[in-house]
Image 1 (cartoon, helix red, strand yellow):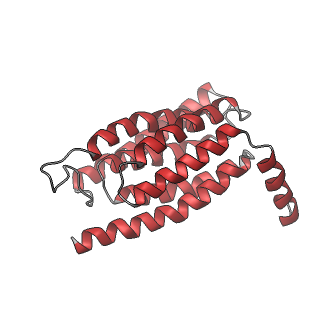
Image 2: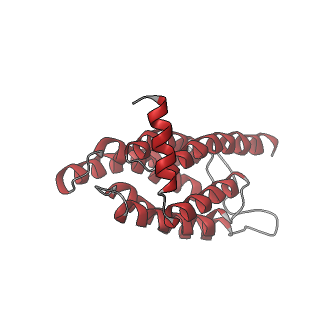
Length: 206
């Protein structure tokens, strides 16, 4: 496919993009922006975005992206959990979960989540669905599972997991001709690196 053909495909697909994908994209971008700022609004904006994204993946793609659709339902549950965690305080000046690096146990749990869910999601997609992208779909989902877990604990490594997930999600959404979501993940990749550097600086200056 030539660059000209890719450009025309982008333009045509953007024109045909429905409101659920537009609203999901806008609210998810806002959510990542708030996450970078360490602002609890990351969660309410994210909840709107992920529920609409689940609808798009389940009912507006052919064949459906089952893992990504289910992943967004997981995002919803983890957003509720993370929202609760982020507002907890030890006292008036200190959060129960401040920005910090993972300890060895938290790192091991996160990596364990990634490996387990990658294998489990891949097997489910191959055995029980008509997905034609099981490898990429399961990689995006499993890395995002880890990212959301670490993010709910305000762990800096959540940004590294998001960076990996976004790198895989970009070609996956392009292949599915979800051009607005493709652009969104390109933006997410840049914002994830930005978020990682900002959170890292916060721990260095604390």
